[in-house]
Length: 256
Image 1 (cartoon, rainbow, N blue to C red):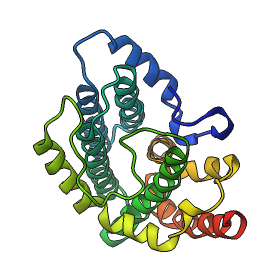
Image 2 (image 1 turned 90 degrees about the vertical axis):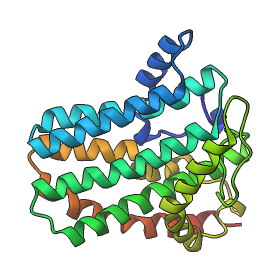
Image 3 (image 1 turned 180 degrees about the vertical axis):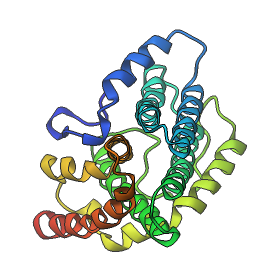
């Protein structure tokens, strides 16, 4: 099920796992498995990937990182197929992502020549990249009747939806704000008027989709299996410079 109408669909380079995610979701449609179960599965896959990095099993690490990306898409697909959207799932997914990202980079630091400060800078860069992509993508989805759980500004604890507990939403939203708040504020400060501008064109969204978590994990997997583990941290630090270029393109070409 697409999140955007046909005219505004773009080639999402971070969403390569979507076809397999749909197959998994359809297979689970009539079972007792919930989107939360799939989220827990991607957490396990991510942890296995981290373990394999530390142990030097880079092909296995690449497999589990890409599997994590596929399952990360499958939980949302299952929620849409079963018509069971939830803020619990929305925030659990995001909290798991950022914690796994940190652990993945720590594992890479452990096995590479990168220093700890460079690893921290790379982590900040990766999170800002993903935040910019999500910011523009959620603006698009809100313009065209996207998912009800997607919000441009995460400032207020949402009301629990049917089938979930408000306490769970409160706790997970609090964690989300703690972990993502500074990144959200930074990107918003860099492009405050994005939601009031012209619709971001498909070609630009495709370029920005290289900031998506799925594509980031794919790049990490490729670097690992090519024996370039020492290049991962420097690459993500350097590629973060594209944040300012993409924002400049949007402001110059697509502001009202």
